[in-house]
Structures are given as C-alpha cells and as structure tokens.
Length: 113
Image 1 (cartoon, rainbow, N blue to C red):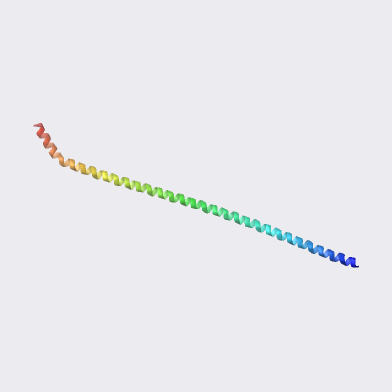
Image 2 (cartoon, rainbow, N blue to C red):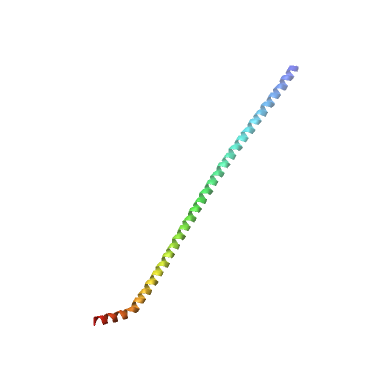
C-alpha cells in the first residue's frame, strides 16, 4: 500500500514537473516572440531613420539648388548693372562726340578752302 501511495505521489509530482516544464517552454516561446517583435520594431525604426536621412538629403539638395539659383540671379543683376554702366559711358562719349561735330565740320571746311 505504501508503494501505491508513493507511486501515486511520484506520478503527481512528475505530472506537475511536466506541466511546469511546458509552462516554462510556453514562456520561452512568448519571450522569443517578444524578441522577434522588438527586432521588427528596431528594423522599422531603422527604416524610418533612413527615410528621414533621405528627406534631409533632399532638403539639402533643394537648398543647394536655391542657393545656386540665387547666385545665378545675382550674376545676372551684376551683368545688367555692368551693361547699364557701359551704356551710360557710351552715351556720354557719344554726347561728347556730338558736341564736337560742329567744330569738326568747321575745321573740315577751313581745310577744304
């Protein structure tokens, strides 16, 4: 009879240990799933960081393009100012030449005589 009780207790203990082992295995599986989820979250964050880096690169390129366009506009304005200065100088010289024309025609007529 004692052996029967021992066998029954032993079987109950074995069953309990098996349940505990199964429970631990399930918890390990849960932890593995959580780790997989964390890895996916890290990958998602890495992709979002990459997207942000690409957006920053695009913004830098746009700013560089704007700076280049502003520089081109400044060069065009400088060219217009230079052309205006040249026109003013030429107009001044033409004005001086036109004031000399009567004297030149007088000298020419005197030389012709």
